Image: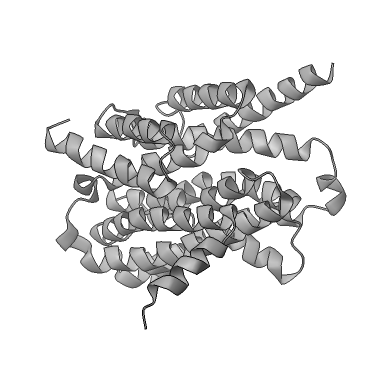
Length: 233
Length: 102
């Protein structure tokens, strides 16, 4: 018996948010390979690379951690850099909590899969049920595939060579742009995006890694406040 | 061993950071400012991630093959390519740009 028809009908039965979540998971998995490979090249073991993906599970922080280790920095600095880059997840947590209102143990599960991809997929939906489906599908799909491909990358390790040769850093750029794109409807979000990007680039050379994105978030909050105020008048 | 301790500490901090937002009292979330602000901040954060992943290399800025990936991805998004295709286009564009020495 062929497997293709049941798979095809399952995919058709998915809602748009679920389909979006799955494709976000697949795409993100792709550059999980690059994390695994770089982690091993930086001197971590395959298990340590996998532990970071399973437990830390926030790409930017993971790359920051191994970046410091690869540069010969102290593990304390690696932890500080990773923690700083993870601060945005606190803001995402507020967003997800307000959108989904999980209770009890679901809060813990939701917190673990609170990442750029799950929040972007959820906040791109109009209907509250679709927001919920988008968040959980993207969160679960990214978790499974990110960990799977981290392992693949870590095992391939040095054999893979420099992941940038394969364009995996380009994949990350495209993935973030793809998450941002559907949010850019109307003048206000476009203005926020442009200003946030500009603030980030101005800040990168002068403040420690992880702070530029926090400055961008502050400016975005101020601009949102100004936009809502001016509409209320 | 101490590598493992630092890894676990960093993971614990990461989880704690994510959890904070879920521990806010429910009535705070009822505030009419929470949703518009969190959507606005999400746009700002994603735009900032696009900027850093394209131009930053450590503490400095650089224009390299990643800019080609950004432009190629934008072109793919303009013609409404599916998300997965956009990401693959980005990867291929960066790889090709490097191949020709950018």
